[in-house]
Image 1 (cartoon, rainbow, N blue to C red):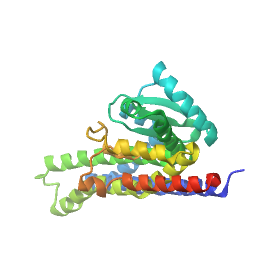
Image 2: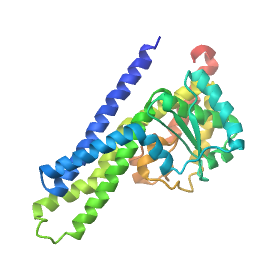
Image 3: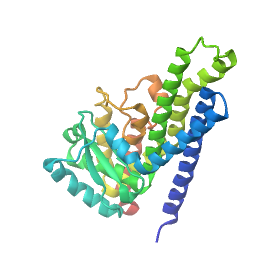
Length: 299
């Protein structure tokens, strides 16, 4: 029988997904309204939003794999990863997700898929080189917890739509500046449209931020429960934090899918990061380790 907590988490995630889709769809509709000056533009924006929502819901995992240029693991990689993910999936009572490798030296990992049955876990070549098996197990357990909590649906849809909003806003800004001195561009239209186009990507990021940060803490705790080794994940996060000198070549809209923010710690990045501070996550994991030692049955 499903626990009340599990049912509660599923319900909250569903509501967040609905709110997220509504807000981002409204933003796309507004951009269409302002760009095309009226109801026709709004309907066009709404049509784009519906198309993107449908595509994101059913095909976002394929979009994410294409964005990351992910490939299936070779025999050596599979021999290392498959036993880990099978054991952890059994403990989590999940179908075994498909494994993919991201061809980059940047150490990171992600999960995607609209449901546990369609779950996907991806790790980078750099992650496999950097982490020993116990820490790699902690990272994979973190991603499996995202799948179990159905975080991947909301995160993937958010990333896909935010990327689309950023692209449309860039196109809109380009169109505005190309026609800046056109007679169609009245003063009031420029005053309303330009701020909207510039702020749209920031708004999309804030929406992502609102739903992503607490999920990372929850996934860390779930990983600790699956492995019984919170310190291994804490050590892995520390290594990842110290190996961000090279940026992963991917749209920033897709960073919520990763286990750690791949971008450096500039002030703006910290303010708009969809991940909580790595140091805070490590401290929470070390506290979980103390709890586990004092009460081995607490997990």
